[in-house]
Amino acid sequence: MVQRSEFSSRRLVLAMSLLLAGCSACGNKSPAPEPAVQADEATQAAEPAPEPAQPGVGLAPDPQGELNAHLLVGESPNALYDWTKASPDVQEQGLGMVEDVVFGQRLFVRMALTGIEGAAPFELTGTMILRGPDGRVLHEQAMKAGQDDLNAEAPGVVVLLPGMDIVFDPGDAAGTYNIECIAESSHSEHTVVHQLRVAGQGLQLDPAMAL
Image (cartoon, rainbow, N blue to C red; front, side, top):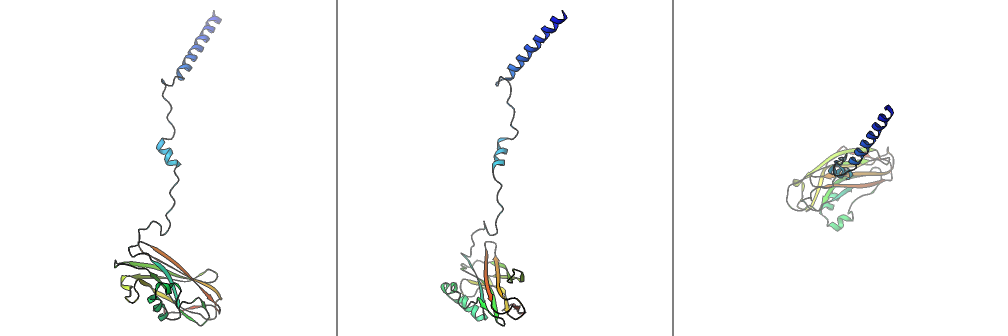
């Protein structure tokens, strides 16, 4: 009796297990498990992260027009002034500008922007950097310009001040020196680099930095 009763109980347990298994297979009667990640979260996870903004990218169009940056290096302030009054074609040819120098030679360095249009007030701030042949920063200074710096004799041109005056003297390495200038406003950013090839020896900054 004990054995039969135990056998019948086993059959009942087995039948109940099969019944429960059949119910779990009915998709309409049991709710589907929710996904671990919701659809909107999954879409966001699949989208790449936005790239960091680059300097000067995404700025509004400059109301002053299409501006071009120039680095002026001449043997006199008059040479720089003549450049500002020249035609765009002559300016692109680098009238009166210097690239090859020797020690004992004095140079006047300025950054200029051309293509300024309209009469809207503006403000430019900038930096001028002088690097030696080994890439080291030898000198760095701030510059600025605004509406009041425009010259009626040189329409569309503004020169950032103060500039940099350089005298080449014995004592420093000969080679190629880089002058880097950056000017920016709330609407645009402009960078220009000029190379000076020193055939003599080195250079020395002139204490008088302005015109």
